[in-house]
Each structure stands twice: as C-alpha cells, then as structure tokens.
Length: 106
Image (tube, rainbow, N blue to C red; front, side):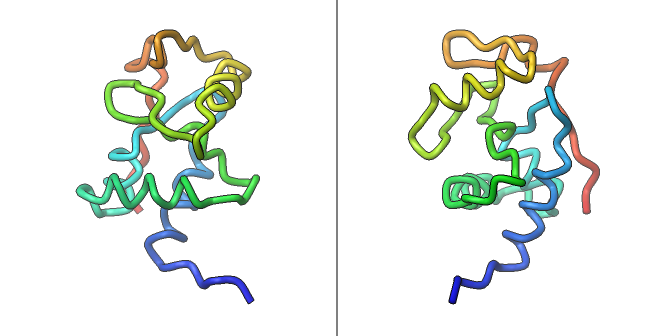
C-alpha cells in the first residue's frame, strides 16, 4: 500500500496542475499559493518525489527563473520547457517576468 500524502502535499500538487502550458511558477510561488510562504523547500521535496505524470513538475522552477532541480535531470526539464515554447539559456528561463504564473491562494 502506498504512503498517504499530507494535506499540504495534495494542495501543492493541485496548484502545480493549474500552472498553464508555457508558463512557470517558482517553488516560493507555489508555497505562497498553498498559504505556506516559507515552505518553498517542502515544495521542492514534493516535486522531487512526485512521479504522477498528470503533475507538470517541470513548470516549477527556482527563484529568479533558474531551473532548479528535476529529479537530477535538468536536461529533461529544459527540453520540456522549451517544448512548451519557453526560451531557456544558461540554466534560466528567459523573459521570466513575462512567463511567470502567479496562482491565487487556495
């Protein structure tokens, strides 16, 4: 039997599923939308261990547009973001301010 997700983890995954195609949000943005603005590292841990293909974890990035992690495969994250039309160079999403998605708080 699988491990039960915490309410916070379920909330985070729901928020991440709402990030539109071709947009990104930071770990901090997701944490703030879940009403836990200091929980950006917890969001990162949830993303790192999420294996649900319905959750676009690649759309969650680090502060200032940096790619952050992706279960150790930054090339895959970069490719997925570029496949959605985002420009990525030097480990950062270009035009970050224009493609950043700010969720409404749950």
